Image (cartoon, rainbow over all chains, first blue to last red; front, side, top):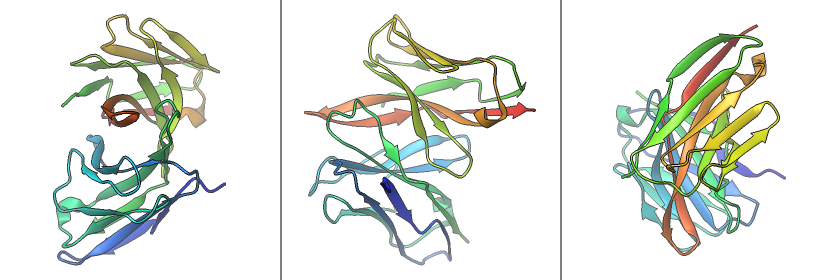
Length: 113
Length: 114
């Protein structure tokens, strides 16, 4: 049982380049989330998808877009990467009745130079 | 939005010592959660608290949901090297129906010296 799978694990981008972070879960969860983690800042919500076909902005959505491709997959896109987007990105999912227990992926470490 | 304040920001302890960390909120939560993040991994749920005043244990971990519903603490007894990591408190914000999103504290970084 893979849980939440994120790809890639590491990425280096030049300023202005674009890329998509992939996330897939195999637990039939309805809700999926993207967080970023920066030193001293904890985990901040970028975007979330409460169910297939819906997406909403979180706390820090600027510079990002998302796509809930199907129930399993939720991708995060950086259209024009900036150094301020250097961070560790985590995808998470949860199902109805999971009593608030998110399952997290192992993260994507992104560096923008 | 709601903010969670965790303290201390970091702790350096010797193996075998007990650890205590806490989390406070500017507003009421109906659920408190404690997560642990191992180095290079995503956070994993340790303990969930659903009722004010509730005291819950999970092995060497004990957590309490404050009576005011604005705070929670986590204790780790007899620490071991594998307790190293970042501990986060979190609380859910309802978005309608059964949907919610979690707000996380900034974390407590725990280092255990063997």
